[in-house]
Image 1: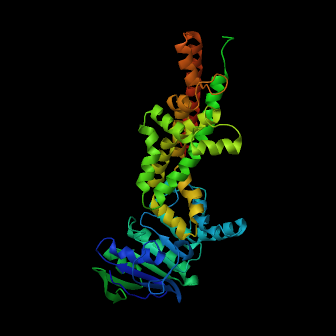
Image 2: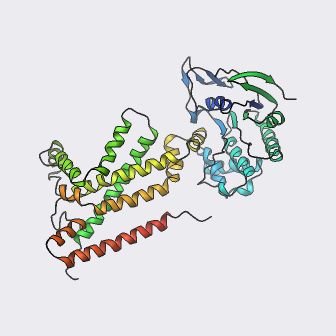
Length: 203
Length: 222
């Protein structure tokens, strides 16, 4: 894989049809997958540089990551899931922040529910709220909406864009679905055989 | 009935409680090391921990006698530090039961840890969790049923140990004679009534413990 790209704030779609290759940049930004050579920096801060060498551990990178299977903690309630990343705040502050995140994604009524009792769309919203509540510097989405219908996708993306108006962080969104790639992003990167082959705005 | 000696039963349960507790704590630690760390010779350590599961108990007991006996360096060191010899004491019975129970806890807890979705652990890391925090809040709670089951098995194994115990703790009535050993002793000496009582009491207590842990281990209703 030999990929180099820069992204701005807003949603950038990484679109490709080769299965798992498109996910690799996400894993590398998060620090889950570490390769021999490369450079990753966010807002001028270096997360990984094979020349220096610098390699920040996952927990220090402050990235939000929503995995394809969402990976909600099954033994925690929605609220406990969302507050998990806020353990450094005082309890009152944590609850306040989490409450705001639940409101942003319109799931405040689900706070005490267990993940397995939620619908697919609700689980997505919880996963997004959990990833954004820590105020990450970049949000990584690995096919997070693939199991949903287009209407629910659009509504979740609209919420995401609305929330991102304030914070203006880059969002990297991997998908293998052409319709999704064209409909949801402001900026599109087309990946083929591990390379960026086209870049631009979807029409 | 009045002549039932409760000492062997009491000792057996004390030994089993302490041994399964130690086997559980050591088991969780070793299982984590084996499930999560990568290092040379890992499978050898795994094999060494599993060995007591396949070795005949008397063989295991013999090895322990060699390693911990009063003429061994470890045995001598122990005697110098604590002023009494380790073998043929209740402590030796605890060591015997622990080593016998340890493979069960390590094996089942390791399998449980390996079944926890690594993605859940990565999510916790991206949310700023240290390895210790993610272990205590994600890995351990998600493995709790397997851990409970492993503890019950370890307890049963420790309670029932005969071969290793008789080799390194011996058969000293009122000191190291556990229930299993006392039953054997009573049968050998033709004290059938005494053996029968011990068997009945041990059986009833074991069933009660199994039943209670099964109840506790049931998943919560939703």
